[in-house]
Length: 106
Image (cartoon, rainbow, N blue to C red; front, side):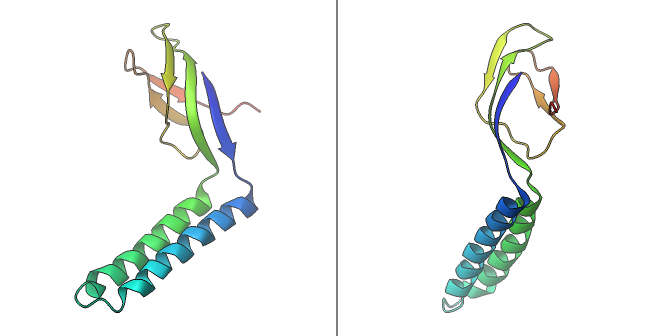
């Protein structure tokens, strides 16, 4: 299987985490003057800011697409969007359902 991915340096990971943190905290700040909504909006935005910035800080890579021949069924597969942030990872084959273990080559 071939993968197209973006590897993030520690500086890029910090910048991505800071960006999502600041945007969500601005959302919390914008929710303060809205009556009724601020009881849900402010804590929700703050919790999302903490969780999502921590996730972005830990994200080492972003996979854009996967493709290649499945070793189980032998069919050439294209997986447009892979949902994992670190390797090794397991991805099901769209053709046969067999799980493929993906590892980084060094």
